Length: 150
Image (cartoon, rainbow, N blue to C red; front, side, top):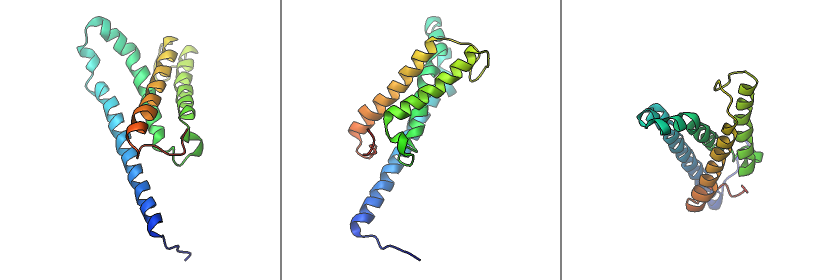
């Protein structure tokens, strides 16, 4: 009924916005698959004992929060408060830390043993994601940036 005819400039912006969203989606899927591969192929089982213990103790504590940050990148253009990378990072850190807090209380949520070092690993994972998001993807791929993000 109330159909607006788009100008050529608006059509161009709409198309470039769709292309940017497709690029972001493809990049996030690639990142998440890269995160999943070491888990699927159980790479830790091929490591010597000292590295094996470190890998199984902390690898997921770093890499899973990174993946969670990138999942939020899929919706940050639609959820206003998530446009700021610090909000995304804080939200992911709080979620990951809450699971560790539950373990400290004896509630086995995504794990069974409380390890205070995990909090540092969660922070490292969130900071790694922020570095890749802002420092690599945002700097080298114009279609990654959300323009309104801080």
